[in-house]
Figure 1 (tube, one colour):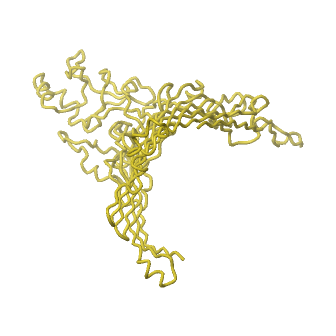
Figure 2 (cartoon, rainbow, N blue to C red):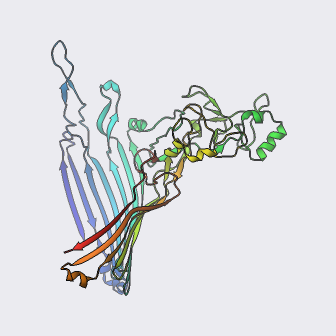
Figure 3 (cartoon, rainbow, N blue to C red):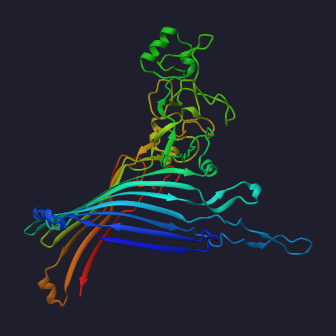
Length: 484
């Protein structure tokens, strides 16, 4: 089977020469099962087909009159009204084009009682449209309403399995469905000015989320510090020790804000005293450099320079799941039926800002019960830093893997139990059928995520973060279905 189509769209949202878009598509289907040499397999193989295809679609911006010059009434001058331009004409704006290759396969077993569908796709988006692109204020405007900024590629696969009366023994029947999927996106090119505007600089503040969009990398990468616990002792406690006492201190696994080299040995100054760990001692972006103290958070000094700064920021994980999908089953016995449907994600990371706020201890907001285990005195061994009032009093809530959690989950979306009344009795009432049922939505969610709901949105330029979203409501329904 062969199919070919061409779609030609025109829009006045684009200027002359850019107004028309041509979007062809072609698809093939080879039913391998119909070939003569497949005849010996038909006892167990009922369908086998291959479906290659390619197509291109176009997207236009949502706004109108982008090519036209628009004017509006301005301020009055010498008792006369004035007019001023309201926009910059976008004469070079082009259609956003999405070209997709897809190779699919359909397989059916045992007279289509078991069906498998597999698709692999490669989609490239060119001339991506981005709204509200910042431009130099010297133009007289802050932003362009929309601009073509670059290209992106999405690759992935989907596997679906479903059954039709796969198990049927007397009054008992069983069917199920499974769905697996994975998608990977990659920025191929982007306007350098736009790319710079999407990337934030590190300003050395607590709760500051870095956004990084890089050529050749996917969206949603999470960056921050590696969290190593809480300093048990103050610097002065170690500074007053003898050399042998310091060696014993390290051998016992105790911690204090002292600089360690790559071998784990203390680094000393010219006076023979251990160097104290600092936060941003080059004074970049903060009022004063900060000396870490007992009870403060320990961040990994990646380059062992005794200074926690932007050079110690590392990749902490991806917001994109490695696997998504769902599954469900249908059990039937006599007139009883049980239907379920689950969905899941595997392998994604979530930045739990709600937990960060609930463990910050810098203001009068409600706090998590976890802060009951905070550091209080020297020697305390805990993972919760000390309480310090004021947003600038400490740096214990920098973005780190302390607040980056596994977002994998399994959720029961829907379950229904139903019973169909005896049809002979129902017909005596002049009805075709009566079915009683009870159902529930969002009954439970299995996850290690510590927030209220791991099903956090992802796919934008930034990271998947949870600022304390409202959890999904559970609902229960009792119903009666009557067929006349």
